[in-house]
Length: 113
View 1 (cartoon, rainbow, N blue to C red):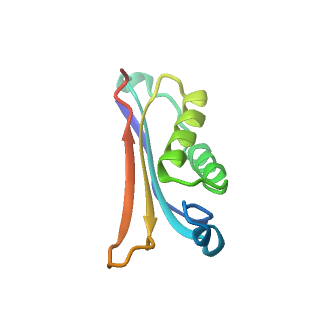
View 2: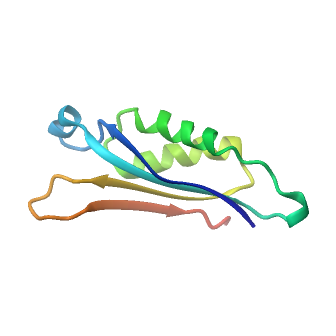
View 3: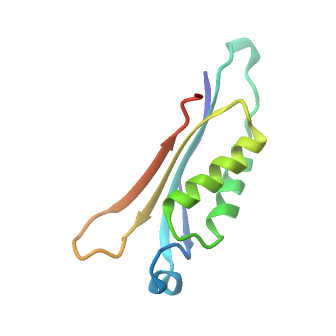
C-alpha cells in the first residue's frame, strides 16, 4: 500500500452555520491521505501538489459544515484517483464555543466498500 499525505494544510475560510462565521472567517486545518494498493516494484505517482491544490480550491468555497468540505474533497479526489482509498480530516481551529478547546474535527475514512 502506497500512501501520500498532506498534513495540516491551513487556510482562512468562510465556513460555518452562523452568519458571523462567514464575516469573521475561520482558521481551518486539513489532513488528506491518498492510498493505493500496490507492490514495491509498481509504485504509482500521486502528486501531493495536486492534492494540496484540490484541498485549497475546495476550502476557499463557502461551506456551512466541515462535513460538506469532506464530501467535496472526497468527490474531487475520487475523480482523479478512483481506485485510491481516502482518509480526510477537517478541523476548525478556535471554534465559536463558550469553553476553551483547541479545535473541532470531522473525519471520514474510505474503507473501499
